[in-house]
Amino acid sequence: MPGWIKNPPPVSMQLSPNEWSVFMRAIALACLIIMFVSPQAAADSGRLIEAKPASDAPAGAIAWRILYETSDKDGRPTQSTALLIAPNTPAPPGGRPVVAWAHGTTGIAEECAPSLGPHAFSSIPGLMQMLRDGWVVVATDYPGLGTSGPHAYLVGNAAGYAVLDSVRAARRVPRVGAGSRFAVWGLSQGAHAALFTGQVAGRYAPDLQLAGVVAAAPPTNLASNLGGDVNPSVRTMLTALATASWSKVYNISLATIAKPAGQRVIGRLAQTCGSEDPALRTKIQVLRLRRQLGNTDLSRIEPWRKLLAVNSAGHSPAGAPLFVAQGGGDKVVSPNVTRQFADDACRRGEKITFVELPGVVHADTAKASANQASSWMKDRFAGIPAKTTCRGH
Image (cartoon, rainbow, N blue to C red; front, side):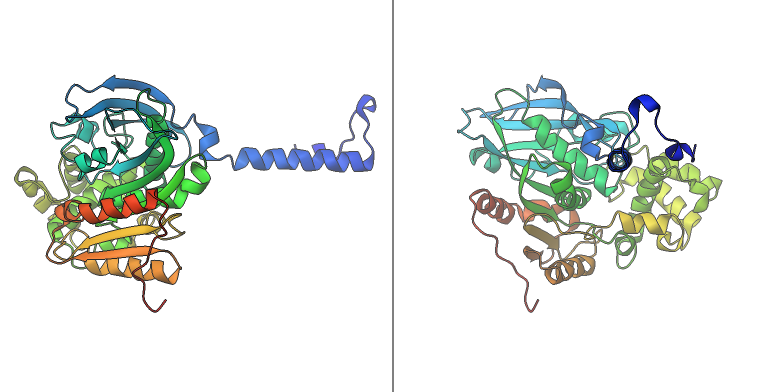
């Protein structure tokens, strides 16, 4: 009804011109608030739904498998599971520091959640040292892994929200003693999540205090990471996971990149749990998909090109000091792409510590840099100003 604002109010509520102007500005402001409502206002973010004690907790620790509420990329309520571990000792006044661990690629099917597997605790690098340091560790599975899907694979904002809400949920579990100060540490897909956690933390979770962001082998520029000197089989597997996920998350037809036979292979690979490096039982499917896709380049096809850009890290500052580790022997995430990200961060004036690990392969990057990362986080929790490896910027 475009003409309604021209009609005067009833006689019983006649307003002066000034009062009418104020009234209309209030209406306009209310409309803007509704249109641009923040994700945290659209969901009870970090609400603890369930916490089940874990009988297989490491020695000297207490642990839970938790279910909590978070937000999807558009701010709509969704749920995620996580593993929560804390020292089995009284928490200090003010609460314990928290490390939010973000895992690497395990697949995009519901059953691929790390917390459901037999190596849930041992897959977290440096866990025992973090517990000895008196820290709480919370390891999200991300929505769609351990809960109903779809899993938003490499969808930056959604991953960041899931990490932040895992910290909020951890603070609501009795006996944990988690404080509001935290760091995020991730490997591969989880390093991508860590970078986006930093980017969205200030507006999404102002109740938390981000001390630092640690990213091991982070896929930063997704278009470049899916090309270049990446192993062709790995590239095909990552393309299958990303397109299978995004076709559902963004409602895009796979017909834009693959014929029916290729779409069926993508569907089968999407039901496979494992790392970025395909297991033997899936390699035949990967080879079939490579033949189907040929030289398909997502960065040249819309809307995939736009989504690759939107979900690449570095569009805004990390929100806290950065520690980035990259293995020189990585064939999943190109070292050259990570070096460029570090250079760009320096140009943006961010405080970044960039560590290159000669000969280290992708899967070992977090483990190989764990001691350095742990020491770096300890300094951030202690309030020691972060140094930078930037030169000439």
